[in-house]
Image 1: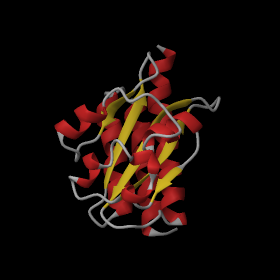
Image 2 (image 1 turned 90 degrees about the vertical axis):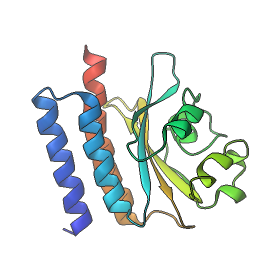
Image 3 (image 1 turned 135 degrees about the vertical axis):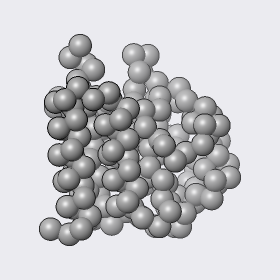
Length: 172
């Protein structure tokens, strides 16, 4: 097991423990985002967005993104032709953008992450046990690259843990 996969497994286990102990959702999701940022490295920033009752993406845990950025993307409607998180929520598939300038999905929004020094991003849908999308776990990069296979596996582990946290709200 690599250091990254071990970190992902530990964070997922901690999230399950916290969930069982009744810890508030934002705190648990924050643990998962912090692990994702450590795994991505290179000054990457991660974010968990969730679908609200109206089907719009809302911030759930984005501790290292500024409030004005989060306000600008608040209430995005899932759309396969917009951004990475919006597209991942719409399609239920991983969406990768290596370069915001070269991807038409970012035409209207690229100025937002680029103003923060990000050049690319990728997003993994967070799904419940029935395969329904509950939200996304997105990673912003400061260099042009795609996630490694190990990063994808680690984020899958973290997204699975996030789905348990988000599914808890569905049960209530």
